[in-house]
Amino acid sequence: MKSMLKACVSVLTAAAVTTAFSGVALAQVKEIGKGEGQVDIVAWPGYIERGETDKNFDWVTSFEKETGCKVNVKTAATSDEMVTLMNQGGFDLVTASGDASLRLIAGKKVQPVNVDLIKDWKAVDDRLKDAPWHTVDGVHYGVPYQWGPNVLAYNAKIFPEAPKSWGVVFEEQNLSDGKSNKGRVQAFDGPIYVADAALYLMKKKPELGIKNPYELNKDQFAAVMEVLSAQRQLVGRYWHDAMVQIDDFKNEGVVASSSWPFQVNLLQADKAVMEKTPIASTVPEEGAMGWADTTMLHAEAAHPNCAYMWMNHSIDAKVQGDLAAWFGSVPSVPAACKGNMLLTDTGCATNGFDNFDKIWFWRTPTSKCEAEGACVPYSQWDKEYRKVMGQ
Image 1 (cartoon, rainbow, N blue to C red):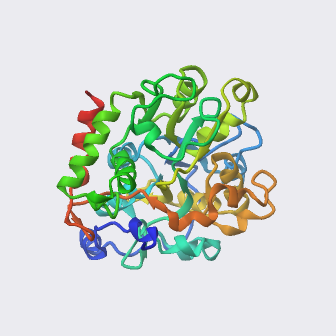
Image 2 (cartoon, helix red, strand yellow; image 1 turned 90 degrees about the horizontal axis):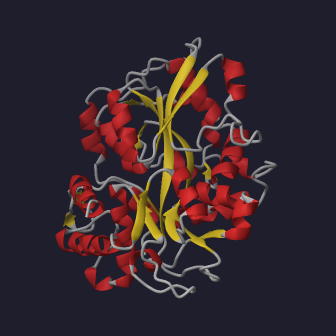
């Protein structure tokens, strides 16, 4: 099988995106000047911490003291929400996943980043430096932040052994307690979840010929939507709020769901939860979707100097290691994998450092694709998945 890294490459060609920018191919910031006093960031939950949840995890306070730039954070639960917020404006930075980054580039909402001003750029993982979700025609539109898989979180009392397949959330079945999984599983509240079902069908029904879960022809897409429509009868909640999902595992009887390591980490850190409803996670035999997130600079950022200061701070090895320990992700700076007390020297391996080529990283599907020639675009994913959730 071809390396799944290739799956990350959006079929928005470099030429197409460059054409969309026509002339805005150079970084607008040539040097970092005096800070403007603040920086406004759109970020995933748990990505920018100032010690309010756990005093050990704080990479904001020191930055504010050193730079004089106050960090204001707006959390977003989905990539679509991030794109909407960036389209509306008023933000300097966004921690965008691959299913948002090229949309932001093509939509001229982010500007090229001058990597000469990123002092630790050479320390960034070589697998990420020129990654196709933030690099177009050799131009960088962001600074890599963190990456990782979407895991299957499960109640270890109900599943004494880790589920081997994502089928536990896609097909009705009786569990070890003799009860059905109906109403006890969750699915992600976002059209990109269509790819999760496609990944499941790649192994379940190889006769469909799905080679890439982001590239689906009409027949393949119809088969995937049939699975998702059937799943609707099982799903107790479509999740997008990480904290709500944590509460659902604690108090609402959820036993299995796609999730992020972030939720699993917080649940496992709660001793009372682990005694009552022990939570674990796994990557099933079909593999996993995943995310590689990039800090991107708004095309009309009001605080570009503070933004560049934050981008520099964001790939500091200590910050990267602390964040990886907190979120359960993998640092974009390999040096963070050693000597960090919170992450420990085994943390990167535990979080999947060596599984890079096994992850189908999020990307935005388009109508043009390599495997099928003509594919169902993201707009149709959005339309049909919303119909399913509304059934």
